[in-house]
Length: 503
Image 1: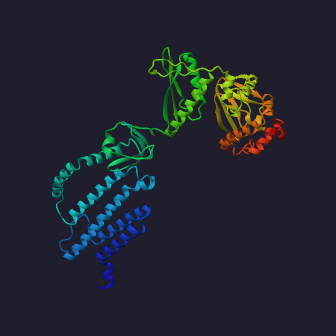
Image 2: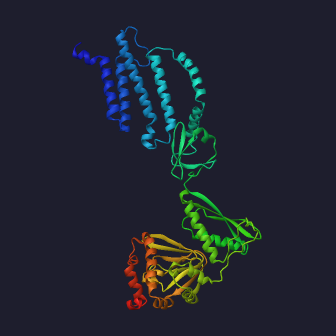
Image 3: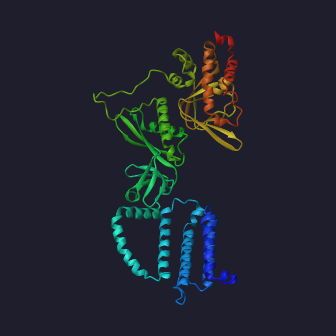
């Protein structure tokens, strides 16, 4: 054969094209799915054009006049064409993975479609290349399929259950689901056999698809990530239920973790001679915050009920002896209980606290009243007795909520002890009662016990450090983080000399 005859020979052209296509597709573009798909489609079109140009029709039987060698090479060319046709169809079946970039969510359905495409390609090769009766082959394989189906009944149940779950899509990758048997976890993978869940203990739970298809499940992540939480609290029947509801409304208003929309609800569940039982319902932005929110709500319930003198009810089940335990009461005044709860005065003796308690003045504010403006310098320490206060800060055109203050919280300590302005505006969110300790009352105490300066400075430094992230762009509390500078400021403001401190 001359060189021209060699390069125009259809077998040589088809073989060369197949070799180049296999190298580029499986080696050069292996890690580039977009270009790989474009090349597969282009190669299939070029191969189809080449075969039809030379009179080789892939989906028809070969010419009877061809020699045995030609028939072999024509058959090989047809097989290559059918394989590339299957690859192109598989590429189109997986094309949404390239653009959506979520390859794990539809893996089961994709594998099923790909399997059907490859099965169709094999049957087409058998019928058009080897000229065998496909119908007889399918009938014969049906008997074998029945035998395999009986042997793999459990596995096939998981497979078809997985298909049903993927079509129904009750969950997707990343959703948190809870099963009827109490199993819960975040979906990390679904395959032919099972669904993989990652539970709160960071353990992988593998649930067969057949069990999952029959189970009653709750998708916590749908329709959105917010999650509802309910908790029950019981109070002694010494306060009117309406007043108890008002206190619990202040509790929910004090929380910084729960969502304001939809509005939290309070429902009285029961009332008898021993207790008023209420159910508090609210939502959090994500189920991961449910535990944090419950801890905060329980803490606020305790603080608000203690401030209102509203004791919790005794347990429903009484001790074996049958003796009823009475709620603990304290003879200490409200002022003394507030001082006991403040870390600032934890080291004071009862006599010193009594002096402060007698000098504390009581003030009442209505809802929306402003107690302190942002940047103002307070002349007293303000302790919340009841109600809810919000601390908001204006930064440019933005308004940031820094904190919510509940009974037992306080503000003004930075102004009183360090001369710094208030970081934000303090406003009442509900009817609020506070107690104030004037600077003139605190000064004699610090003069008598100069060592308290160091203790107060340490407490202020720790609190400022914990809230440092709120004031990164502010110079109003500069120096509060530094212990020596804060001690010096307190001494100067209260005119406490170094000599007095060392005495």
